[in-house]
Structure formats: structure tokens, C-alpha cells
Length: 142
Length: 144
Image 1 (cartoon, helix red, strand yellow):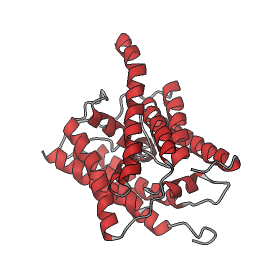
Image 2: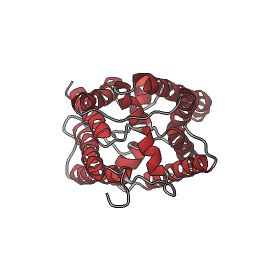
Image 3: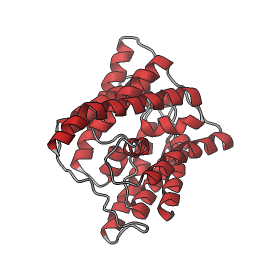
């Protein structure tokens, strides 16, 4: 219960930050990626602002354990493989195409419901497609 | 901002700090990465992560609540592309973030802030791919 409340609080703050920073506006995000055009550097400030508390949080975590959990948050793999590279490249193409990544897409459900819902449903389908293609292979390796 | 009249550095920084604080709560409170694509997949039940599904759902549900609060209090600007673009981009983003194990939040904020080589590599890759896509579309005069 305590964990779920913390997760909800985190999600609300995250969504608030996305809206205040203008990152739920796809046009602004695309303008950040348009470095040789009419460049809008706002996203760099968002990244800088977000990295600061998290850099501190990782240092704090080195000296203790999470408040409401015993879970170890470090991902199990450290390998840079073709999945990571091609996945990130494919994601970047979609991100550039519409100017929407998963967080802002879901947060925008409260702002532009029809457009955001279409994006989120398509994103769910894309995730499902990934699972259909790769789950058989993963099972056979396990 | 001089030279960039459309930039919103103060709003960006304040919003960014809130995003970072949110991710820090998830990390220090729950020992979890606030990676939206992973938590969304967990909510859908299509991720093998050990994150409890309710926890993922609580975080994901919070996102539109937070954005909705800002919309109510101050109003927001959001200029969305045409439906066909949303559909195609959504599928690509969903597929790519699962294959690459993360998006702007998981790799770009959580991973980058602990200097994870995987996340640094992923962030550079999706930023570059995004820049190439937007630039190509502008040069070809394709609007969204």
C-alpha cells in the first residue's frame, strides 16, 4: 500500500513536471530535435533539471536502502548489444516523427484526450508486437 | 532567452526538477526505476519485470492526473500531429522502447544520472535518430 501511494505520488509529480516544462507539447519537443532549424533548447533545461535530483538520489542510495522496499533497482544487464542500439534508434525515429515519447503521451491523455489516446493505443500495440516477435525466442533461450 | 525567443528555460528547469524529484521518490521510496515505457508495459501485463503491477499502474495513472492539474490551474499548450502520424509513431515508439529497454525517462534521466554506459549509449542513439528524423522531414518539407 505504502509503495503504491509513493508510486502514485511520483507519477503525479512526473506528470506535473512534464506539463509545466512544456514537454507534453509535441511541437516543442520536435523543435528541440530540429537543431539546424528553428531550434528550441527548452528540453535541455528539462533534462538538466531532472538529472540533478536523480544524481543526488543515486548517491543517497549508495548509503542506504529504499524506504518502502527491499528491491534492488539496478538493471541486470550492462551489455551494449544490438537490441539496445536498434531499439533506441527505432524509438528515436518515432520520437522525431511525432514529437511524443511514452511519458508525455500518457500524461497528455488529460490535455488532448483523443490524440493522446490514439498514440497510447498505438504504442501499446507496438509493445505487443515486440513481445509477439521476441517472446518465442526468449522462451527458447530460457 | 536571447537568440531563442520560443524557449522556456525557467519552465523547463522547474518542470525538469519536478520530474527528477518524481524519479527520486520512485528510486528512494520503492527502489524502482521511473521508466515510463517499462512501467506502462508492466501495466499492460506484457513485461517480465518483477515490479508489482499495481505499483506500475499507480505511477502510470499519476501522469495524466499531474498534467491535468496543471491544465486546470494554468492551462497548457499542446500541438499534436495528425492521427495517421500519431498511429505510426505510436507503434514505432512502443516497439523501439521495448527492444531498447527504455525511453527518455528510463535511459535519459534515470540511467544517465548514474552514468550507466547502456543508458548513455541509448540516449545518444535516440537523440541522434530523432534529430535525423526531424531534420529529414523538414528538408523534404513533410509537415506533421
